[in-house]
Image (cartoon, rainbow, N blue to C red; front, side, top):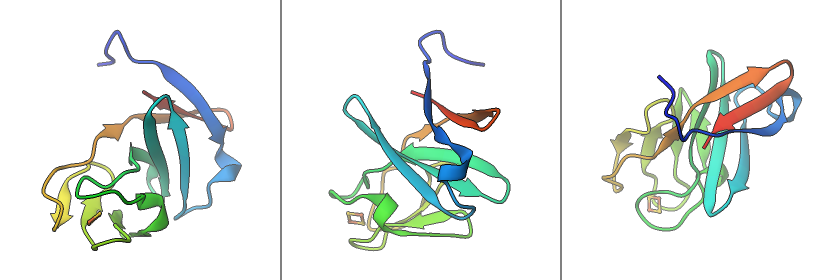
Length: 106
Ligand code: FES
């Protein structure tokens, strides 16, 4: 169920994200990245929970994102840590489309 304080923002066109690709954006102080997988769109914080690195500069493969700095691996659907050195999950965000637009709840 959607929380009352959820705001959906219009981020980009679906054409801006290749399948298997990522789209990073900033909303207020939050840096967020949207992932386009075969089975849908998902979003997490774009900053690694270990130190400062942008996950959008890492590698997206098999539903996981690998941090470019020390190689932590996160499940992009749940934010869960699949491999350290990070030990804290990423925040996730709901994503949906409206026509060709991609919306993210922030
Ligand atoms: S900053 Fe991401 S694993 Fe260290």
